[in-house]
Image 1 (tube, chains in turn cyan, blue):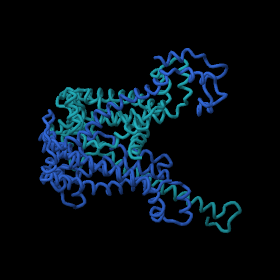
Image 2: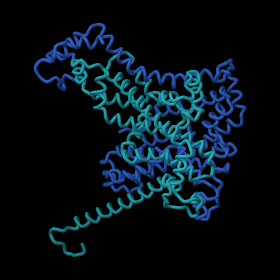
Image 3: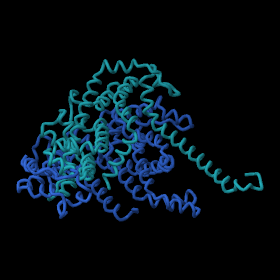
Image 4: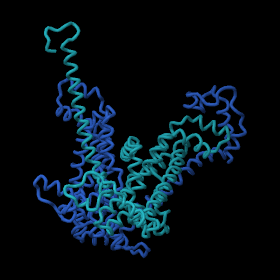
Length: 295
Length: 345
């Protein structure tokens, strides 16, 4: 660029073009780095759970704070063997998986019922199904407790699973997917003598795999992370999920940070593992749901 | 099933592919030269089948609607009834008219909880909105090139972590003696704070946690909003010589307004209903959350305590009804405004 006069090929244009490109790229890398750093700051608290849980005795009180995990699993082992955390963990697994299955079944049924049949009041039923999202949860909890009491569902697995066995998001997503399914598929299936359920299981659900994945992820997150509902609706540890156990430990272990964080790790690991493998899907799923609520 | 039997009797498809063409898909019934099989299928539909078909639609929707009805719609309707009665869970209802409201409005604690909730929401909305917007603008270019996706995931991660599990580490971070929050403060020469043990700083501590836990969600919502801004408009403004700030002020901000509005509503609705993090962060010493000295007793926390600690179900239902109406009004306003007030592409 400094060699004047210019030859015929390398014009000022091209040289400047490259320079601009380089600054843009440089700025982007800078931004990307800043973004990454901020991202790491956000993950830091989660990382610290692991550091404290696997740290040396007294690491929680160290100033300046300890930054690297010592990978001592004594505390973890203690929590696993000397508390009921495994029991709570299995409760959570049971509740979460049962909820996921139920949400898929009711979601596929309702999605198909609202997509494939023409009958009076269909749109109204759809609005009723979607409208649940607009009800503010905190305002309902008192009367929900009343309903649960009268149904005899307090302090039972059913009381933790059944109320969340249907999901507006699932119905919405499956209806959307089934509306795109050619009607002729259904006609052919009927000619072949398949009933609705065979058709749904063999044809409709396999073609709606993205919706299934989204629903599974959403239900997993909301079900695994549930806290307030079991806090209010259960009283015996027989059926309580792991989040509630952590809350118990927070008051009983109070200052035993290593044991407390070890217990937290056990609740966090399933979420972290699933997030690690499905991060993109999960981000889209949760965002899609929240946009769906209000649009 | 009758329907199936009728169908099984119909002859198989005549010569040709069993799967219909696109045309047939659009209007199978009115196509005059259409496929005999499909038409005969419809003709052979008996009266029973014609009734049974939509009935099946109803039947398939019923399980979901039953769950929604029993566990969500019935409790919502019950609010409007039970707020005017004196009752406990076991029953024993006597009509009280507006008595519950009178009792409630004479409780200073209730007014205090409304103030606390208002403070919480009024701080959280601009704070979360600005941080989420800033993060989204920062990550925008990167995400478009598919390599900022990782940073986005990291910022989003806290939102899907279980609240109690991550509250544990935040209680540790906010510990007055050895917590990182105070370590950072004293490092830059600021006084150390009592955080969760100090009535003035407990709510800000809860705000920090809530910000950390939720801002990723709103960032991603903003990123989605930014991604639908037409590239040509931005390019045109750039050609016209718009600098970064003008670009933001005159192009991006107006085009982003639907998303901004949506995010604003979501933040206020969500923070107004914050419960688990308050319970976890302030529950350790006090046992029931909302402390110290009721400084973090938001409306939701007070409803919980009134009903499930003190068993005043009537009062709790009355408070719930008020919260219900407030939140519903916000949602309805949002629905109304979002259709005319803001820009749509």
